[in-house]
Image 1 (cartoon, rainbow, N blue to C red):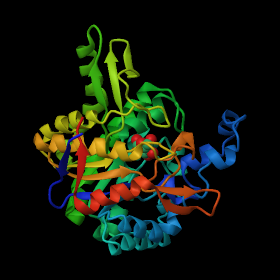
Image 2 (cartoon, helix red, strand yellow):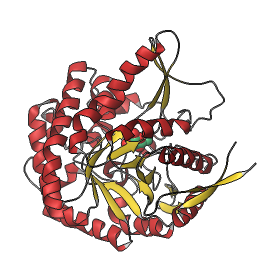
Image 3 (tube, protein in one colour):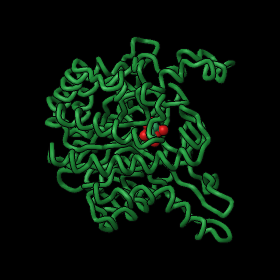
Image 4 (cartoon, rainbow, N blue to C red):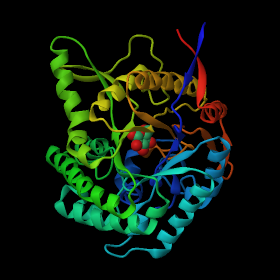
Length: 408
Ligand code: BGC
């Protein structure tokens, strides 16, 4: 098979992403923590093996204490960037009470990232809420916007000097649908109006905080947008696809793009859309991840070319797979990077790639069994970190800024 050299633009950012709740551990004031320990959740997990070890976040990966080890591993793996988050429920455990010790600790975490030569993408909200705010309805009310603005401004003023790229929110569409429409994430509502309010209040919060962040830190701001590759199928497929694409991929983006300096792209999914709805494509020999998501690297090219119309720099803020045996990750990364490069050749201004995730972590309602990490976490053995084979291969790409790819 002939090989072609895939070379990325100069100063391309290479690294991995994670979130606060999924890694830090012991975020006891978060709505997720309370939900995980609720009777309802315990009842739902009855019959599962070791539900406590498997489905309760607990100590996480202990990133809150082991950040230095993780950043140093990332640096050894030739990463020059990292994405992680701060946890609102830790910073403001009670309404209006901001914990200065926690902010001091986050300063140490950020200093450590910088000392390891990593450019920092910092996420301010990634699916969780402080319990006090969840009780007041979170982002279903306009008050949620004001609480977010106050929290975000405090974080930005205190920690801004260490942050290179801001992500105000992670995937508002996923957050709103999973928490308020599909009943998967806490508070497990199934209420279209609530989901709609959450989406629109988050849009408003982003549009209000973005100019403030720019004013305080002069650093670029965006969100991590969940962008799926949707392809039409069947009679009236194009119409159905346009509608679905608008709601899933464009609605939030269009309303926040003027307050975004770049576009953060999270790419995982490809669906076929017909008038009967979305479905994962099961045909055409595509492989699946351990979570059963079919792997469609070519979709990332379409997603990137679609957002190029906004004429902003693009950073891939998440892309990855659950693969506990680490048998698909190397090919997954190379195939996706090939199509990222195809998009760049056609004009997409892509400037960085952050793989999800740096280490295995708490995969929300699925718990710990899906393994997304470049670095394995041994939960039986004091959370020992060990770079997977694919991490070493990815490290070579990060180091060289190119790789040789076998084109079929
Ligand atoms: C979320 C992550 C999650 C990943 C894999 C993304 O949509 O931002 O928190 O772990 O998908 O499911």
